[in-house]
Length: 395
Ligand code: PHB
Image (spheres, rainbow, N blue to C red):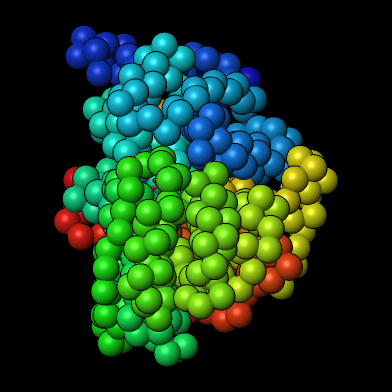
């Protein structure tokens, strides 16, 4: 019924505008009975688990609505982006042109995101970013059709330095993968740490997704800093935690990181992760009814413990539901769709959040400590952290 009504309204509109050809893409989209959702996520490689958790979380949010979006059935399309930036444009184009998705949900890796971003800006397809924190997507190249439900790369490390200096750790080595996410996580760390009197004595890096950490750990041992701070995630993070511990460093040099370091890897890392301190916009142990219910439902549905990626996927679903409900499932009705999403308050397992004018969440950062295979909250590191959105003009 809804679809037919949309079609009739659109046909009337098209008669007037057909000569310009402007409404044709919307018409083609509206003709499909189902809302077409495309997942472009990593399902192989070091970020494979992250992609799966995001998809699970997203599906869970929709399942809570009877599997529908604004009253319409949903059809899913999937591409494994392999966290490979070289294939980013091609993979995103496939979802937009071949599968004609109404919304592209992706991705995890900041380099791959740049490919999606180009396609989203050129095609106008709605893009929901469920993880990748690359700054430019919600700064100078922000766009009305691009919404991020996760974080910006520097947002998660801004508050880390204060936690370190509070513990007397004033000289640190930084280590990461050399790509946008690592570089931008460093920007946040450097800004926060130096502002409270910390000194970064050395920056170390290796190419993504290499996990040959040995030479770098030897270098850290010889520098003897007060602390090490880092950005790693996924399978590589588990390996880093194990290698850091095996090298004997966890006894002498406190390890810190953005919280991705200890998300989804606590089983794989075992005792090696104990005592690691991180900052992130989520923690397993948040003692709220909202988080507890989410964790229970997710564990029941997927026989897995949720992590920050599952929460981000879930919140991506919640945001889209807000938009879709406002336009009764007609995602081609862009202005009210975007307006509803821009104004939404998301009641998330991480705590309530809303978007900044540049479409990035404004959110609290928690200080967490790994204890017995759990990320325990030990405080709020910083309240209501917003990305600068520098250079964003929505146009
Ligand atoms: C990124 O590439 O932006 C990225 C990847 C994994 C994370 C966080 C950020 O956990």
